[in-house]
Length: 506
Image (cartoon, rainbow, N blue to C red):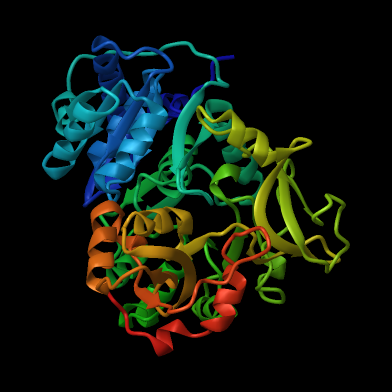
């Protein structure tokens, strides 16, 4: 068996050649056109020496070009490595060092300059401008295909996790197709003709796996937006008769606050999932009043993005629940000693299923640590009720989730600790009206250091969303546990309301 995630595109190109596959900025590409385009791009990759299993990085903003370059790499038998364009050079260099790409396809301008600098000082790779795909939109039929092991990775998605260094989550062709097919049993609307609107960055698991690949495997239409504008997103939901929309609470809250939301006809919207951060029951009810059954999901990148969704029959009576898993997916909650929790008892969530990653790229130690007896340790705290429904309680991992994006405090801490004036630093989450949570840095200094200098240093070495919005200076040493680690729980108790007592620094 040599099933590949781009094979269904070729099948749909024969079954319904004129059907729209991708729509970007009002420009539609049919399945027949997309299939031929991918063949030519894959052939170009192969012609430049890309072999089966080579990594191909793609970096750029949401665009049709990005989709074609990424899918073409997969069709060529390469392993796609989506790179986050919001990261700074040092962060991108870490991803390059971890994935060792043979080729990086970059959007022209500053991104190309950044990647060229990384290639010159770190892991060497060929660099190609993303615009190359435009010249291959038409041309001779290439009919390109390579046989490969379906258990070979198709995509490596990098995620921060709980440590300073990001880890590459592996999605094989088999894993990706299995989770797509399982979800088609859970959600009848994940089927031929589905119309999915994506406003999140394409490089993440939601954009690449759940949006682009998921939709095209089913023969649906993938509507991609350049970015998120709440009012425009509401209009697009109605105008394009979108059937499926997935997002973090921040998106739904922003859309519900627009004047367009009140008058929009959202009757075509049949499946809406929300996750990635704590979800207020009031938000769920606001969409329900609009006739949209907004349902909570639970998931993590290592589990394919989403593990479970609240069943429709419980969405009104138990809106805070996240469901019980799919027909092939199991989860349980366990105590610190590994024994299974009783219903109603809090414990760490462990999962098994077709969507669970086979491991982390080039990181066997992290892979071993993530699994216990075949179960993936999520590091999240949950409760199962008598019906087997899961309720997410909190994260065991030292993680901040800001607007649905994972931020590792250790990464920010190591950046700030590099300043000679800083004696101690701890980064903790604080409430934020817009993003749910945001980082706050608590520091003890050896000698005076302006807050502006700390912020500027973070801006230089970290992506914008990781830069602390609050910096708190303490005169006394930070509290520590017996192990010597900083006691963040005590720190949070001592600083219960930083946004109310300290000014924002950005």
